[in-house]
Image (cartoon, rainbow, N blue to C red; front, side, top):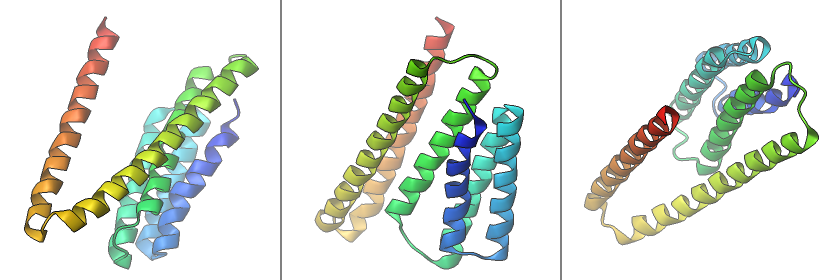
Length: 171
């Protein structure tokens, strides 16, 4: 597996915040994020890639805040999918480094990544639709309660997934 596959998610992750608000701090943060990601891909190390992804997320948040862009569901979905694909690609490159990989394995992995991206895109569309319906149905005072419940459910799901994953590894 070549390392050049990771170039597209890195370009998307660094380019999207620059497209939203091309200010000097955003350019600096996204440049550092891209360099960390490239360093991690070249050295087959996940820590620099993860650091680059975190910096890119900070840069995207700064770009949205400084541009006063508001909610951008499509941009956030594209950024998130690029981040997940970059982490998956870098992990696969690290695990498969120096190995001869059958074409069927690469095809199966690509199908998995495309399927996962399609599921993520469908989830974003569904959650956007649910948010629009809730904005109409729930009065303004109750929206904070609904948002808090959503955050609590997301935290509980992430906690459950981490615990379940940890027990599977220990078995």
